[in-house]
Image (tube, rainbow, N blue to C red):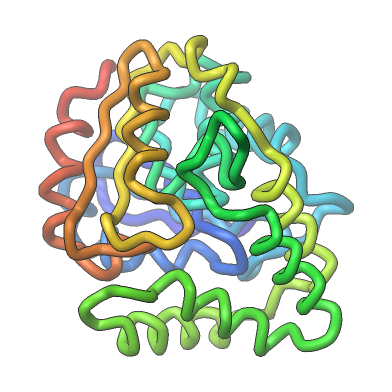
Length: 254
């Protein structure tokens, strides 16, 4: 997996969301590198990383935990599922966990109304086979919908995607499959490290209620909702995001 590291201090590993790469965390690097050693990962098949035969949570989590046996992990959206799975499989590797616009279950269920319909991911997966660029554009539009500067955010995210080799449709379909199928709710009670579930009030993919309920299901979790942000709060509201994040980071166990 391709890696870029910045700054000095405790290790803070950043895991990006679907179709993106580690460069998406530029706003956080600029604001945190004086106090933390930030490691921006390109997950397999994304950015400048080599594609694995199959994009799956467990082998990715195992490889990351072997590389950083003791760190703070921040995962955005799909990256949040990777970080959560890592903390559950390798408790000693996680000093603390930050789940950004992430949920233990992304799709609706009778007992989980704070999510999106499964058809959302099914439609994106179907469209990938016929028009990958347009499908990515639709996903960016959904992720930035409702923010104050949606057009600028979408333009910046698009430029990030275009700056590196584009993930294959096969790999992106596997990622959508994880978002569609994964359900880690029953495991949350076993999460041993502190967790912060943080997102935006205007998020159309992960409603604030999902963050609040997930945090309540963990032994040491709490949630923060930024009123003006959507699915990428560290991009749309970077200052507010860091203000909410830093007190949690400072309290992380050694």
